[in-house]
Length: 480
Image (tube, rainbow, N blue to C red; front, side):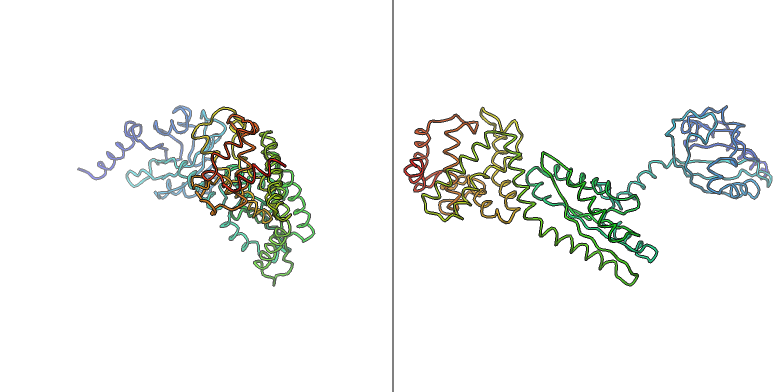
């Protein structure tokens, strides 16, 4: 068979309507000038266009994206020299005549334009496309995640490490750095759960963004720490931005609790100064401020948490006051020092602070609780311990609260301590708490008379309660 005829037969078959139409890849065929003469179903479906709206009306060489991406000369060589071109483009609605596409239409495609040659001349060209939009979106998402914090959308530590090196050039002087640390995040997580803590982090991030300028680079380094790079920013301007951040953070109010952030900053003014030294000074400044503020801040946070508990359940306020008063009397009967009495009284007032984690309906429930609900209630002594121990001045109180549901027979919680393993003040609090809970409507259990409550204490001494302390409580504390 003549080779020329054989090639022409192959070309004819390749350009046949059936071959093109049934091809799973979007494709079209153009003449020697680049005008489209055929399309296939896959292409028409992709672009939502009709055959008659494209054939004879669309020229490959005049495609806006081909021109924009400087591909026209390469495409011309397909027609003049028989070259093959691989390319990648972004298409939108306005790139196609007659296309029925939404205004948001945008796809990314990869394609190949190759010539059809017969008798040594280019007679036609064929473009075959592949829609890579989803691949591109995945790549963009991976790229975004590699440099952004998934919770706040701010830049992450990896991006910061790259950007601080890029910014550290003389033309960006003076370069300032602000370091920030959320106050009381751990306490917040302990009191309200990590989802609440995450919302606090997001709110703080938004407050920082609101306070900064468009060109400032804000990153979350992890946990409760943030850093802000401020190129071409003087120390006085940095101080002003820091003040705005503090002001906006102080407006954050969640569960009627206000939050704050400790901020430190420093400024690089000469090229010889090391940028990481400036970062370290900003960080040290932040920690110094946090150290001076943290005690008061955490104590205020504890006060806000206990107030929030009392707002959720009014009877908890009454119960806390009565238990605190009885603990104070008990302490005086035992001839404790004023400091010891203060600690014991404070433990009585704060002993149920861990119940802040409970739903309001469960806190105010008057009928019997389910096993699952009781399991949740039992968590309050450990949660209370974590909240109170966040403030160093409350460490002794936290320890008493942790063990106020232990039993001398070892069947209590959370640590199943026995007898004298249980701290003395916890054994005292256990008795006072139980008595007030029995005689006042503060739990889901039936309210008892004072005489029946005393009998309950006596019946359970040596098992639930310390026997000696029960006798002192009944015979000396209650009679005062």
